[in-house]
Length: 248
Length: 173
Image (cartoon, helix red, strand yellow):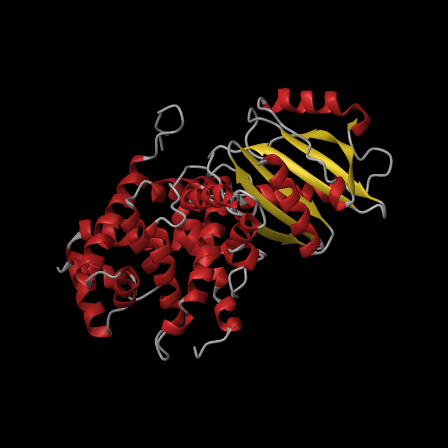
């Protein structure tokens, strides 16, 4: 019996006559019948394992690639003296984009943390900005890498303080730092900083969860996600400020 | 102008996500792959030929993204991650035995060579015809058939042997 016929039988693409002839063959060849049964079970198992994905909510769209995702780094570089250096750096980071999978998780984590702590009146942070030196030393120690709290004063946001979050993945992974900022109107932004397993720089990316917008990127060993219930343009400007400070 | 609408493409996103999830074994890597596929499809949207299967075309775009390593993802066994669909949803509804079977299947899939896994999934999960699968992967139909045969047989062996767990022990059935 032709192997191809057996697979076509499994996939139900045979004519009635061809199907009947395969069935005659299978009746006489129990080993082939066992294989065909196993392959059919595989198809069914694939649906059991993955059909739930069909009903999951997702934020993906078919539209022009986001301008800031693709062109922003170039535009950003152009605004600097010494832009050529930054341009080269960012260009290099595009080349390395390939290994940077899984960065969506950081955006998700930032959006969730922002939603949890942003409305806090009395305890938005664990360590207040008045104790910034301690805050930064503490978070650097816990993340086991130097962490900074960039100043967003130029954008109108002052540092409220920060807190430690559990890692999103397995226990034992490095914890995560969350800085919170506030402007004069009481609007808050959250900057999440965490160690990235794949230390490959990425371009800036944008995500959205409900009213919360998130810009996120990976820079060296750290991933950053800036989340806020503010417009995309404003958030993008602040994110540029953060990036600039971290890459002087 | 392309003669499909954004809505037609977006209606297919769940299918792309399902396939990508099975292909990469990770929710995050899958959505990154779908995101890149949608962007690539946007850029190439004029190249779609009216009258041909839009879904197969999208899978072909995804195949290109996947193999070109634009976002090359090593299939990882991050299957116990809580955000992996099925662990928290499908499995909760199913019996523990089914949950184990589903987990074993995902693990076994990731042990197949990429090109065999793609064919097994395009045919078995996405129900593309052999001709469409050949088109998606840019190979002759005979290659599709041999990959399908090898992939299914390898999967059967892996599932029947039982997969070694983290400590290298095999579960006894």
